[in-house]
Length: 326
Image 1 (cartoon, helix red, strand yellow):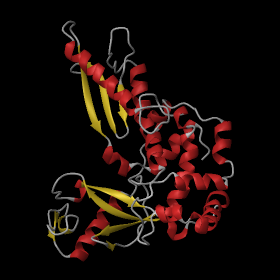
Image 2: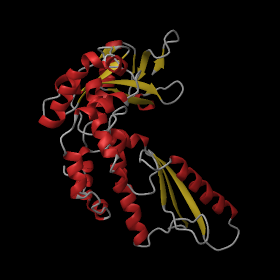
Image 3: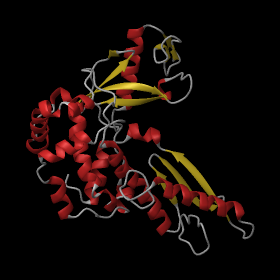
């Protein structure tokens, strides 16, 4: 895929997965729509038994009562005020700044509609449709995999999602392992950065002993688009939680056909970071189980310190273990 020099974001050529070069704008839009329709299509959930075995019930009845209590007008207002005013709007062109500035005019109608969605299971309708715009992840990208799909959700949907996220944020620390330092109130991502640095320093300074340590960095950013909704539901159920979206790809200002996804989390959705944390608990569960069974030992920042098997930084992960052939 290449960009027109006059418009840095204009896609003028696409190389498909089959190696075909296409330049016709309608064909580029069709190919991009097909790519993301396949990306966000469920491939089925494998048996999650081993993952679920290491997850304990951490969400209690009082937590669910708090989460499921009827939403109030002030929660809608707090959510709308807490959103970035100039975030990219949907095709109607109205960013959240418009709603924030003219809340005295539109606030009553917005609040009534959002409470209808939250408390009365009112249908979202077109407010739940999402435009996907592509942000380059590398200079001069050549394929669709080198773009990050950012979801342009409607303001109404974002207000609803932000309202739910504000509640979830208050109990999320109960079910997320301490090795995850991002998006959880009271935790700083720099804590894990410093801890990882100390472990690397210890590994580099080690001069004695027959056994060494190793570290493996994993980039889980692509997993964001492949999260199976069924898996999240099973993990949330095991944690104790009491438990329809449509997309359209936007290429060069043109929208493709709507399609219904069945997996993936929306980049730009206020709820997505918390859902990804819940999903990544599956990895933490496997690591805890393996450590308990003696399959991995982790590494220490000091002789008397705890053994660390892995650290999570939002969608990045570092695994620590004993350096051996096994």
